[in-house]
Image (cartoon, rainbow over all chains, first blue to last red; front, side, top):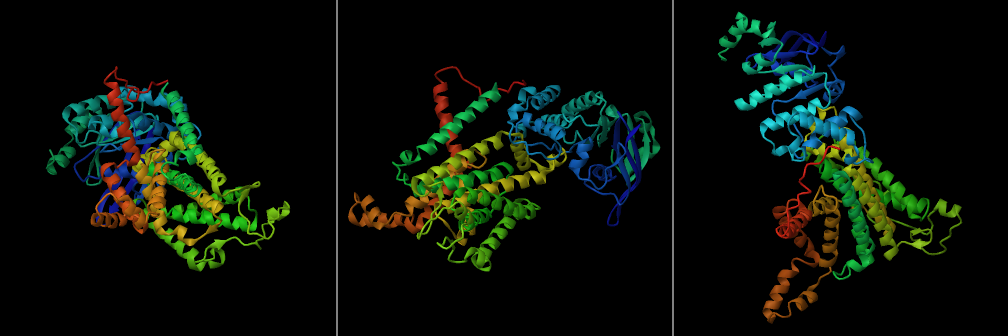
Length: 251
Length: 385
């Protein structure tokens, strides 16, 4: 069953046609990668899923609910979490606080003045956050300040913050951008483990190595249109894809 | 374990705080601040600063217009004295409500922007309020002269309860206790303790954690399913209510309200107090408020004769020179001292006086630790239970 459905999406920026009739179906429980050369419209497409951009025409539905015209926090409350190109974390809070905040958001909704309890009273939330940090190998750093972490650890923390909400859909925008090879491989392993939790993932990626080791299905975007959609083995041999990458001088 | 310890340390903090407030007249006597007028100011501006810190210290929204809420609180309190009763309780309740409503209005508009634009918007609103109070709304605020009590005021509640003040101008009293002098200080002090307690609760609560998240990364908050605006607005309104209470108390201890209370210098003063003490810390803003009010009162009271006496050990020409230089920093020029102090603090202790205190405590700890085994209770990761 498809959990995320993009139909006939068009988006223009002035004279530039960023998205040209894009159709995409993401099956529940799969890892779906969206690849393409620079300027293909990958980020524009992602921004249409999360309430940052509104397509000119077309529809984006998640679990049969439209994602258009609602705010990012409302989309998250529906069960969509997002990982950014540069990890977005609460840099001056401790790791455990960083993970507790999304857990509170999941339990209490978008706004609640919960001022009579102390954070220490919230044992369930704290335990949940600690478990998640444990899963991602950050438990021993739980009381450190998040801003001091390495890039790779920040990415782990951000994933912990998303996963603690048990999202139905996880959007990843170039999760390994700017990482050293070793960190990249660690992140791939991590994402593979996460995908076993039966979380649907949409990965926007540049790095072919990452895509081919992760994805169940790949959509190739070039100049705002989907030029190919298939399992990884078939994408490798696809002539159109090679044309798009080689022709665009992006090897 | 950690959470229990934290709670216990908060209880100790509150008890010590209450003890200091209770023993204020004795404690501040040696530094010449043991008289009720100044002690009242410590308590009232302490409340104002605690409230401001909930906004600025936690969410990072720097308001330059909080004096407007102080003024609104004062006007509301004086009007309540005039119309309802000289008892401070209705006056303060209404001052808090008025401060809250007024801050909801201003916050609703100003919070559409963040950073410097937010600050400018609040400043503009406060100046607008000041000008309204000073001239346009003269029927309500009595303009330049300031709003004062009159013997002929209706005071419906007092009349209903058969309270008659006779032919003298009434003063606020709490069920027969006159609230000037020390009783006034203890009344403000009790409220200061209550406010400090509320502040501890907010700081330690999940709500406080959300406010810190607003300061830290609003983008992440939005993509984490949290609506940032009501959180920031709630902090703004809470701090507006604290300011309303402080304004009301100013009227309780001295029942008149003037527009100058809303001027931008008053808004700036509360920013200085909070930063000087240490924004985002529990105690810092109260200390900052105390230090600034102390300087204002003590340094501005210095005159040339006192200075000449102080430097009398110098030979005469030097004595006059020294007194002249020092004279620049006292009396009318006490702001110069404040400015210098503020610069020193911001440059060397960006975390305010509280950072200085922590540095000294740590230095002391390190010395004692080198004798025995190192205790690392603070840095140990909290257990998951």
